[in-house]
Length: 435
Image: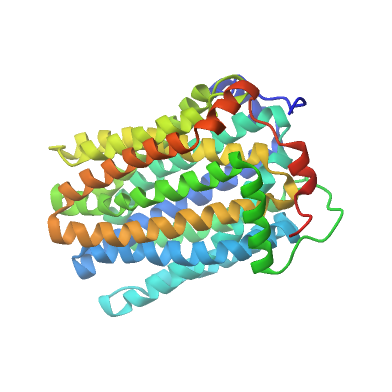
């Protein structure tokens, strides 16, 4: 590990703004993500409110999360293979076109008997997202210089939080004032604009390929697991989100707190989602600072971020007002946003382009499966025991996972403190050689 790629030590807000000004291709991808993410939150706020209005049960909200997460988790393994085998730009544009058309189908969900269509449409849209997201994450290191990857990830992570804050808040207002159909149309339009922006990016989304990647999904997954096992840093990074997902089902209770604990309806969902977004906006920049020069504190920062996520949600259970609850959710997602961004950045730094799409697909699969189980158990517990004790317990689970993961990664954390983070040359050379 003597030779390292240059790392942007000053990965803060100033470096991020400079990157946006200088790199037009990254700017187009950033704007595409900004617009489509904003539309996504318009959609989810409207669907959460619709489910509670039609059924009155927290399980219906959890069912929406399941309809989104299970297809994403399963299709991600296929998406990773496609992202490493075909032109990533074209894949992303095709996915945006498909999602544009599918979003229009929500206009037909206008009574409880049509709720099945909402679940089906969300599942199919999520399957296309399972192709889009690994391709986008794998492509990012090819659109920026190595020293710009840290600021690019901080921007991308904060973008998710920004549009959660803005999109969820506006989505709640639009759904309440103009009706949910307006939110559905906005989401469809956002995918169309995203596709147009991505089609105009000039830089290649992949490094030059010297051999055909593995096309068989099962063999590709085995190859991915073997690569992760050879580099324990990669193994630590792909398992951290899986454990995070065990507690992250707590987000299913955001709609329940807004509707049932505070009586604030769709606007209340938007307010709590906005608090979540503010935390996720700031968290990635704090995470970049905590990671330190040459990312020496990367793994330690991830452990701290996990603990903050748990503590934030543990306190949500005792908050007396909507505003106080939004603050608690915001604190939780300071940690959630930092953890997500740092673990994704670590994979982009460590994994070579040829197998990067499959690694990210495997990463996404693990968290979606664990989050789905968590959301179902959380919803059942909230209906049986109440939302407040349930959210406190889930916060404690997150803190416990932070402690366990930090202990299990002691050797990796110590090695990174000494050597920083860089690809292991022997593993980069072996990537894609096949089992």
